[in-house]
Structure formats: C-alpha cells, structure tokens
Length: 438
Image 1 (cartoon, helix red, strand yellow):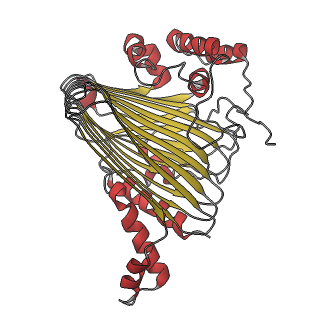
Image 2 (tube, helix red, strand yellow; image 1 turned 30 degrees about the horizontal axis):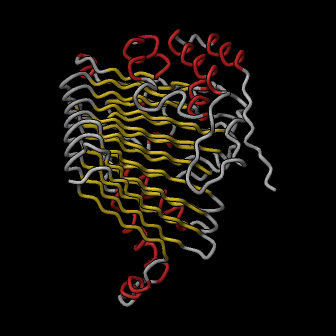
Image 3 (tube, one colour; image 1 turned 90 degrees about the vertical axis):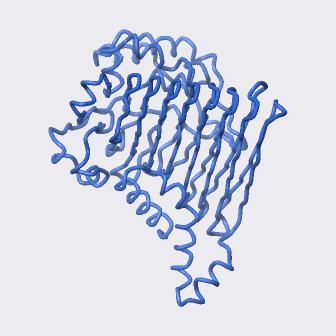
C-alpha cells in the first residue's frame, strides 16, 4: 500500500507574521488570511490518471529566500543575459529566487499609464486595481487546496496592466532565476489588458542549479478585456527534484484574443493546468505546448478552452517527446457551452516516445452543448516514424542525426510561435540538450 506523503502542514500565524515583517500590503495580507481560513476544508485537485497522494506539495524549507539584486542590465548573470536582446530590451523584470532583482520600463510606457511592477509592490501601490482582478475571475482562492496554499505562501511575481487602447510594440519580459536549492517559488503573474490594448509577454523560469527538493507553485492569470490582444510566451526550465503545480489561466472579453506558446522543459514532476475561458462573442485562443520529458519524470497536462461566447474559436496543439522512463498524460478539452453558437473547437495532441520505458497518454475530449458548431480532434502516441528516418538516412544522414531532425521538426510549430529570437534560441538549445542527453 502506497504511503501518503502529501500531508498538509502550515502554520497560519507564521505566514501572517512573515508577511507583516516583509511589509506586505494590507490587501495581500487579507488575501493570505482568506486563503488560510479556507484551506483546511478544500480538496486537492484531481488531475486525470495521476494520483497525487505521494507528491509532496507542502514541504517548503525556506518560505522566502532573499537573494542579490542587480543595478543594470550589464550586471545580470550571463544565463539571464543570454535570454535578452541586450540592444533592444526595453521592458524587463528579473526576479532572483524570491527577490525583485531588476526592473526596466520604458518612459514611453510609463507616460501612457502602463504598470509593470512586482506583484507585492503593486498590491500596495494600486490596491483597487489589483484587488479587482487578483484571484477573482481567473483562478479562485478556494478553487482547491493548492490554489489556497499558493495564495498563503505567495512570495513573488509580476503585475502588468495595459490601459485602454494602448498597444505595446516591444515585448514585456520576465526572467526568474532560481539558483538556491532551498528556495521555493510561489510566483503569481497577473496580466490585465484593458479594452483595445495589445501586449506581447514572455517569461522564463530558469534554474542555475541541478537539483532542488523544494516547491514550485505558480499561477498566471491573463485578463483580455473587449478587443484586447495578448500573446503569452514562456519557457520553463527548472531543476530536477522540485514538486510542481503550474496553472496558467486566461479570460477573454468580446473580440479578444489570447495566444499561448509554452515550452515546458522542467526536469521535475509537474502538474500543469492551462485553461482559457472564451467569455466574449468572437473571442479566440490559440494554445501551443511543447514538452520534453526525461529520466523518471511524471508529467500531467490539462489543457482546456471553454467556449461561452458566440462565434468563438479555440485551437489546442500539444506535442511531447518522452525518453528514458518519463511518462506524460495529455488531457485536452474543448468545451462548447450552450449558447456558444457557431463556435469552433479544435485540438491535436501527439506524443513521441524515444525508449521502451517511456510512456505517453493522449486524451482528446470534446464536450458539446450546442448544435451549430464546428469541432474536431486528433491524437497519436508512438515512436519516430521509420519511413522518415529511412528517407533521411538514404540521403547520407546518420541515424542519430536523422532522429534529431525529425524531433526538431515535430516540436518546431511551438518554437516558431515564440516572439523573442533569443528565447526561441534558448528553447531550441534546451530541446537539443534534453533529447541528446544520456
């Protein structure tokens, strides 16, 4: 019989005392108190086909880790600089473990009323604005125990607000450098694109260490109001040994778009939830995910686009590569609610397995409560196509190089969707390293 190590332990007095000592805002402390009041009665999330009783989500050795800060772009660590276009970077936030370490925002954006601040500071500087959107319409504090735990333990993150009709031309970028083995990441990103605004946002979670036995509990909320357009790119590459829950949630208004391009390269066991609610008529979301699993990783991906608005369009594309003894569950859900007439829900999930012990499971689900709609899905799990290998090898390419080319081609649709060239290059390098590692 499996031992249940997923035991919930938290000292509410210590949480509030720590937040008070750090000078957190009344708003943030009140949210933490709300989470602590509710957390005992909440259940754990229930990802399909993955039992969480042996996942330790609640042991955080060091709830807050203070780390060094940087005075300029030139002072940033080389690993961070590699992710930036040093000549063109205008809007960048760097977090070093749990410490806001560097912030640069162009004067032009500040003059237009754009807000880019670490979320704890923003909750003090803009309490009414943050309170309106923080864990209200996106992820609810009482959604389940991990959401409440995230709120209580929150120790970093970013708030971005784009006012009405402001179009940001250059991407806003966040880089989180995790290089302390005792640091846990309870990071919260809140993006609000007001009516008619446009934003491209890219984030990188990067470990500078090989292993950590701590926690990753990350929530992102993206609110795209009427006629707003948000492109959200991410590359996650955190160390082995972490226990991860990562939830990225989107909500669209009328004629709004949220496009996701996610390179999920973490080396730990992680539960992922990416759900977008198409609330407004004519709203759209395009979700692209690429993942490479290795070692003995256990990965579970739930990707949902839920249609409420008429004429809404949701497309999901997930490609994964599993090697060694890694295993993955790909759950894709396209749900067209009653009243969402003329909506279109499409999804594709494909998994390549590179070894006999690797496992992949792709589960496409369509839930349709309306008649006048379009919907479709495709799923496959298998090995590298021997005909593709034969074709390449017949032209003098070695088998190892042929496999590499096939895998890169398989994953490239997501890589190409990332909007920053240096981040594209990083993802390609990570894919290369993970696929070719022994």
